[in-house]
Image (cartoon, rainbow, N blue to C red; front, side, top):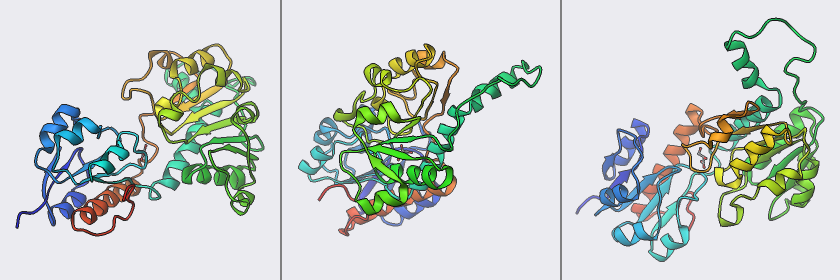
Length: 322
Ligand code: DGY
């Protein structure tokens, strides 16, 4: 009997590919240059499964062109690149990689927020330029985190992990906005209180965005929302770029209507809006919030677990559709 055939759409860890090779014929993308939709379709011809990351577009066009496909397994928790409803209609199983990256991503979100609030990269650039002459009382003063209000937009697993860091580590009262409220017994240890979006924007000293990206969250934070925030506040986005209108954010930062921002994700990444590159009070990182060694490995293994389960008739550990 023919072994199932799978495509690994980006370069992943050798041990993960070896595990897949024990079950399947595997084609890998060793150059790690992302394949666009056309190339992906070409390479997926006749294949049963695909291992994807954050960017490979799995949509109706691709599904129609790849009728043999039975499983799409992503090593990311965010799956806005995958049309899950279309996959379900086409009988294609889909999985993502939740949980294994929660704490690592929350660590990074907190680091980015702190770097923005305390102007760490801005002052480092100053030092590297050789401009540091003396200590001064009003030199690179930033905002405190301890005792200030932490606002969280999107209170899923990562949002809750950030709330825990803020509440327990930094004594920050936590306000959050989410479609659904946490049960009181989950809110209590986080000292977290659900508020409407307007109140969240108005009250947060530090706003962290962890809401999934979808049509409903596209530019959820644009010029009108930024105008509701305190001019002393910071905004950190570790969700997806499209949640924030980057041009509006750059304008708010440039005009002093917002103190600072930390961004790990960008609309249209790896391109970054040129206005953001031109403002000093934003910390920019290339979508690395989950990038610790153990976590990236765990994410890739979880995607492999799902792919193996999907193509051997087992229940998927973290499936997204029936
Ligand atoms: C995810 O898993 O969705 C992250 O954005 C990738 O690190």
